[in-house]
Image (cartoon, rainbow, N blue to C red; front, side):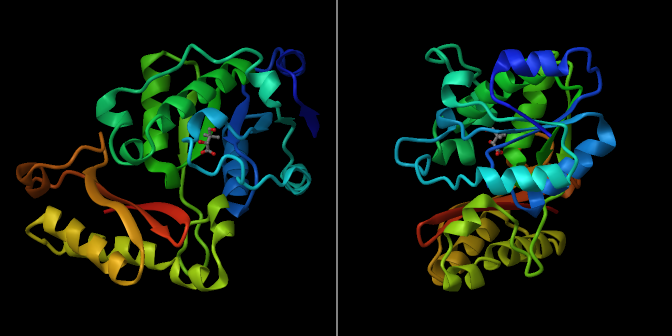
Length: 279
Ligand code: PAF
């Protein structure tokens, strides 16, 4: 595997490649990321991964400084997966001058759910993903469904800018007890790790109630948040939305069977976890 940090070297290395499959990451790779690499391989060749902890998508009080950086272990994992190039720019490589031009998603999608609780997050994500796409020029790129809203925003962005990159969504990779794998799970204490699958259990409970015809989705969301709070979680949201645009369904749309997804974000101790489940 070639490890490349400069944009020019990356372009030289990938010149003439028309079927590149790309998986952007922030490192600290776990089985979930590796499943994205395997899916990428099915959709293109060569597979290119990136590792870059993108300052632009972290708020001032968020975990940019303590975000886990495990570069050597990550390299070994990617080598085993047969990744051809790892693009691992430094901040100077990717942002040699202040990144003043930004990609701003529409308010209706970028400022709801995660965007409401993490202002600027999707602006930072869209900006870096656009820049990474411009460097790698992939034919396909793979993103996990665990970051459901991120996947939708990037898919819409790629379509609206007519980017020549197909966006592929990968199923969420879960531990045996249901917890969605995430680099931030590493922040959990032993006790918190035992409690953490309750978030997914709550999503399943909401999905069952919804499928069973619960008449009031807002009341159901509130009940789910109360269940989390009772066990010491601090929920930001539990929200049932339409899969097509992440807006709340009207009663008529719900009755007509609009495909739904329930999304949640909640803090357990100091660790903020997110998850979702298609209903
Ligand atoms: O999902 C992530 O790890 C990041 O948001 C991404 C897409 C690599 C952009 O920094």
